[in-house]
Length: 361
Image (cartoon, rainbow, N blue to C red; front, top):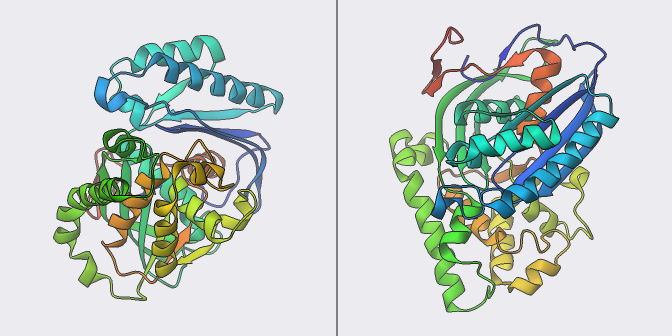
């Protein structure tokens, strides 16, 4: 099966406490949870923007300030893991650590100062775990699923086929992979390439936004043409789901939340016309206005423009009527994996199946 495979699906693990840590190019995130009948119950959480990949595209190295910021965040995570009596933990690192020439030295320092053993996972496993984490939001009556994850250093796109799973399974759908693409373009890489965009208004800002959108569109053009996505997925026959800070930010702005609220955002829907309108509103703001917005803030003010540009390019790939917003993904996938015995095969994805070890059948 080209996604998470199941061992003992629907049979929760022991009465342990589980921790999932996701160190990305932009964010450091932790979830601590206990098994529950519907999957797991979160008992603690942590999220901090650390910008580990800052300057990586130009230098090929993790910078000293970025590593220091990240280690401070990981110390907070280590404290929570200890205080909560975690019995099983998985800590993974993604695109920034995959690309950095000095990553091993960084991992050694993390181990020495925090006790956390970070594991660098492949793009394939990252995507598979994100699918696992988002699966509870997939509607079982619409078989085609287009899932994307806009990260700091890369963007993953998955076209999945789903059918209802047997009663009692850990996830509502049995999934097969139809097509997959990982693009080495994310909000940090684009924002650094085209500048911080502190003046959002004006011809220069708009030109940069259009250039970012055009770059992402060019990066996915072959994928879109090869699979003829626009024609193969007619309106109303696909569910589109986005998991990233970009889409959750758009949802928070749309809802006029006085401060970001995950419970109000996760699982909500945005009509595609609304996505365009909110993106236009954000792009029209200047830096100070974005920084002052309670659902954007100063940490995302210079990145959200790049996220909107990536999202605009992706929305051209398929004619979905609306977008479902997921404030979940890799961490939730790791928790489901640990609790329910789900694992992502250690092979590579080809269209329609896994290739690699014996996981594909």
